[in-house]
Image (cartoon, rainbow, N blue to C red; front, side):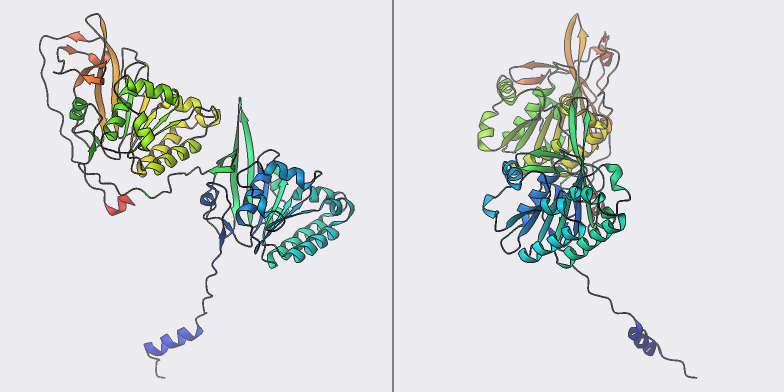
Length: 529
């Protein structure tokens, strides 16, 4: 028997191979909630059946209204079923206080229907029939039932489990076939979510919660599931403001594309020429530099000089402060001949005052990144880490170190050169950098401290670390005068044990050159990604 040729085999395989169905593209609806679309992987899948579950006071009704007003049009209206003991007009009175509320959409693009009478007087089949009747008459693209838990609580007393499942199944099938994106809003506990048939059938499950710790309350959002989308896992911080619900992703900044930086010889001046010389020409662009020292050593002054050096070249900058108010910060800078008022008016500088005692790291990061993006900042000062930690809600102080890692990575990834100040206590017996053990997070470390010399308290600084750079090993004395931080020249070499805080006078001194280091190389394409 003649064997079939390779060509014949290929034709036969092609005939029996199953035809692949065309990929269905799922349209994503915007939520109207800042940060939530990013968490959801682009928005809410159209025609999906979703549940917004939360305990009272977490913002579930506000979230539902934001989604409705963000998507409803006259051509594609939204239908909002209320199952509350209060009239819809009372609920709307509170919702219209938020900026997303558009009164012009009421009655045309957004319609409200009260189900309370039917739920209280009729059985589940009658409730389903009423929903079908109204949906058929109004032809909505978005349907909300708030509170769906009220419907189910009423049903428990009248129906068995089978009837409840039939009701949920019938409601799901009807609204999905109608091609409406549905949201069932209800008050549930975390334990009630497990094993509930409603949550099994749902395409998307939004879980809102709030945690009280000491005197602070923090609201959280978790996307337990969303079919057809790659959502960001974990608990995300949410806040209710005048704009409604705002969401802050726990991976904020980490999923941003890293800026295409030139990591070669490009350096930024600190504003102190002698310090630039010690650094080998300044701070590498895109680095994160930590200035550590006790109170009064000039950390903030040095950081402000860094900002000034950039402003003189018309480089936009952002200053994030946690302890001192902007007016006081500006006035103190003026004492050293640093004008911050003029660049503020020109839009070259933004000063962010972050002092609330219930901040989250994600909120803070978002605000700083927004400011950086608004003015295209090249330089950023965070003053200080101690104030930053104190401004956080207690729940976020536990993992402060990990949060700093994310924040610094996000900011340097945006192409910003960062100076961060941190206060440390001098023991006169050691040289600590920070109580947070975060030296590995920074590319460069400048240590400022007090020493006792000839019966006087003086100030010295040293470059502890400079990643990829050849820096001076000198311990240099400096003063704070009308010009800010000024390093004394020539170098003071007549003392030993300066790092102890109580140096000894030596008979002679030897200046040794800085230790050689490998040249900083350009990152490969793989590393850049």
